[in-house]
Structures are given as C-alpha cells and as structure tokens.
Length: 317
Image 1 (cartoon, rainbow, N blue to C red):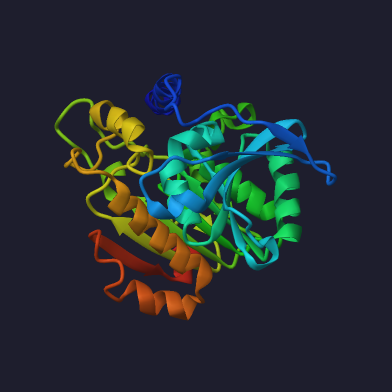
Image 2: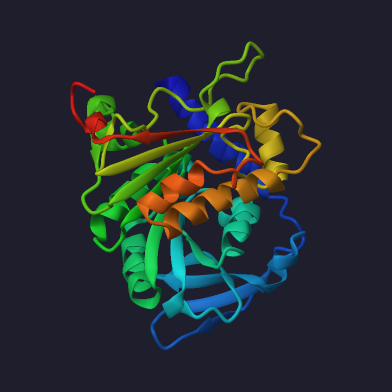
C-alpha cells in the first residue's frame, strides 16, 4: 500500500513541479461577471493544429472555484454535446497538462469542462451543463475515476462514461483507509454504457528500473464495476502518461511511467486516435459503435477491443 501511495503522490508532485515552468502562451486572463451567477474568462490557445485557431480555453467560476473548459468560439451550446473530464491525481492535475488532448477532443465539436477535486461544486456544474448543453458525458483518467463515478451517480442525465486507465483510490480516504475496498464492487446507477479505454504499458512489467506497471493492483475493470453495458479498448504501444502534453509525458516516461518508445515523434497521432475513439463512442449508438470500432477507421494505433458482457457483474464471472 505504501508503494501505491508513493506512486500516486509522485505522479502529482512530478507534474506539479514541471508545471511551475508554464509555456509562455498560458497567459493571465481577465474575468467577467455574468448574470447567471457564474464568472467566465477566456484565453486563446497556441497549438500546432490549424483547427485550434478557433478553439479557446475559458474559465468559469462556480462556488468561487475556477473551472477551466475548452470550446470552439461562438458555440451554440443547445446543439453541442459536452464532456466533463476528470484529470489524474484525484482530479488535482490542472487542465494545462492535458491541453493538447483536450483541444483535440474539442476540435470534434465537443465542449470539454475540466473537473476539480470538489464533488459538491462539480455536481452543481453538471446540473448547469445538463441545462445548457444537448447532452453531458463523463471521461476520466487514472485516479480521477472514483470522482467521475460518484458524479455519474449524482446526475441521472449522464448516460455514458469513459474510464481511461482507471484506478480505485478509495483506500486513500480516511473512512476507507483500514477497510478492504479492493473487494467492494463499484456500481453505476444511471449510466447506460461505459468504455474502458486503456494503454497497455500501464499494466506491463519492464526489467528496467524504475519502469514497473504504473497502474497498481487497485485498477478498475469490467469485473469490479457494475453497469448494464461495458466495452474495452486497449492501445498496445502506449503508456499511462502519453495522454499528457509531450513535455510532461516525457518526464514521466523517463521516471516512473514508460510510454511510447519513439519519444522523438510527437504524440499527436495518439491524441487524435483517443479523440476519435471518444467521439465515436459518445456520439454513436451501441450498434453503430460495434460496427465502426471493428472497421479500419482507427488503424493509426494498434489496439485490442473487447465487448464485455453482463456476466462480469456476476460472482461466477
């Protein structure tokens, strides 16, 4: 348990130290008050993709907490689907560290709000999003999974959930510290469908120290999460932190979390592949998803797929 705790803390501290040297294009921005009680501000993104010229990063205040979100300028919210994204390190890692990936998702005409580690504020945010946008879905990375699942159980309008390399960090809370949470299944009350979107190297051993599996034994998978429909996609050549902006992903690759071997190449292809998977899963019916995921649309990254049946919710699975 001490090793697991250290790994999670190391991920958070390494990224926080790196983030102290922000790229120059993340400038201070001005906040304006709006009549609905929220405060909002924006800053243009500087990115290599041409589509990012029309994408802006905004900041909205809820309960005096800053909520970052990514959106195409002049978005018609009522005709736009929104994603609530939970970052790693228990939703503490700031949005800037995921900005390349989140911008790529936004280019597919989603709005993306980044959750913070405050479930009451995020529940209020999710209710606001449910009223303002066409639909709300949830995506999480790493130890953001538990907060994401809790939020889904608080908002009955959220019907789809994507868990990227999910980790069960319930043992870190005071009430569960001496309890065996590993054997307690998680249950989704309202979500109709969940996708496990994993990077294989998060779970693979290496003889090179210190590159051991970054996902500990407290992983969440189809066997310990109860939901009506479950699917699984696994990228074979990528690691737990390759979802991050390259400068941060490279730091983790060289320390505790081995990623894609060719670090000279950029991670845009992987981010685009992840974004395509997210877009297809959230925008299609289950039947359309099954057809498209088995086509050649996603061949830019080598991956395995698995349609998980309901038997995984039974004890004899």
